[in-house]
Length: 576
Image (cartoon, rainbow, N blue to C red; front, side, top):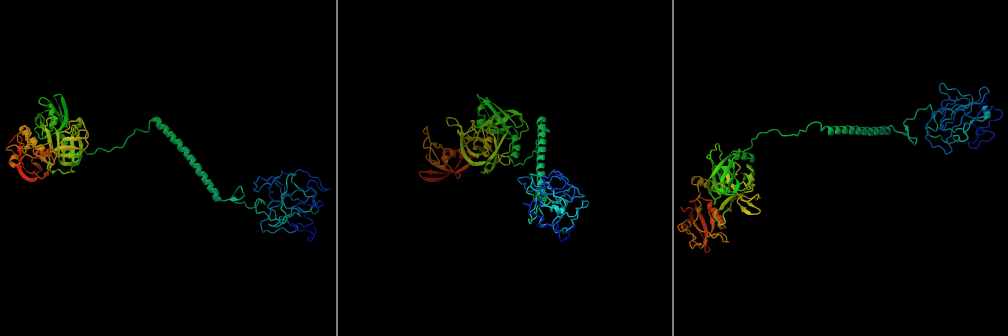
């Protein structure tokens, strides 16, 4: 062994023994393919296939073994992948020099082997022969080539192919921080997965990627399973007609009782008293309504309902129960448009209670019952729209049998067939007899046409109907209250004017009549009756007929521009 002062440091060869990496002298660095003379010939083929991944050997010097493929993250040079040069070893026993893999690099800060010593090998690894250099410390310059062949006793052997460029680190160059550039198989394994750039991916990002993939996969699987199940169920239901029969929800049976002041409560009490009349005779026929007055079978209705029967016609009464009976006319009056018929042999009749029409106020609720267009038992409701509404209806061409009614107006629907039916108050009491409607096409008519309701219905007040019905039942005829004057119906001024002369030359004021006794003269204009304004002759008749014969009235009249007030007692149409 040469003295220590004559041998250079193992890690840094002297300048004379370390030529430049790019241009080694011919005398110091023989070509790898041409060994020096006197040396034992060697095979040109390396002991193993070149590692195209430049993977350093495993362990300490010893026989080389093929390295497992490792992804190298750095960019591959255009001319190919470089292979690290092997470190030659001295011959053992005079044999051929055996290439020794480059030992692993010590960790940063580890002591470097001194002259004549080598780094401690791993357990079980062969020990390097004297003179083998140890790995330099981190950051120290690395020799590009092994020591001079003469100092080692054997020429160096190069294993780089003709198409590969050896990897080396120039003297003084810093050591790369890339863990793959200086690979140590015995070092701690780097954590994290390598990305394409060579950096380690964080565990959180990797877990997010796995979670996102699992979520998407689960959603797709759930969608596929749900679609399959839904399709199977739909096919089954379509072919089998459903799972079971359809049962719709419905309210249970409730009590039929209703509050007495409701429309249903009023109708329930009143319907047994209402009847439908079918009239025929003289080539005519019609349908109307009536209601029971007493237990003797008397029924009140309109005169125009029973008028087609005449003296030999037929009247059939149908009760709410469906029972029928024949009826005959007891009495009728065209001026009031009222009639009474009677059924015989019928028991258990329920009379309708009568109210007082003088108590009715505008806005009171009312219920109308009838048989419009032969629809028996039809119930409608509304309110009182007006009171003391003067109307005229019916009558012949000569002006006789005209009905003058001081009517109750209602918006309860009244249609043809309702005539003679009751108009009830909120307690189910009769306050009027439905008699007329005003239609859009023909003006006022007494249920004679087929026009429908437009919300203008008129009923005879029950106070007047009661008086007339009693007279018809008792005497077969009704009396009309009269003033005893003839009115000028063509007068266009305000008020009712007494005619100046009659057509036969007689006096327009009946001698000895109520008007004559009160001092009425021809040409007087009556403007008020009992404090109510009178605007025409029709209104004066209507207001007068709303009273009974014998009632005292107070009249205001104009005579030659002077207003006078007189008092008179009503007479009757029979002159009494």
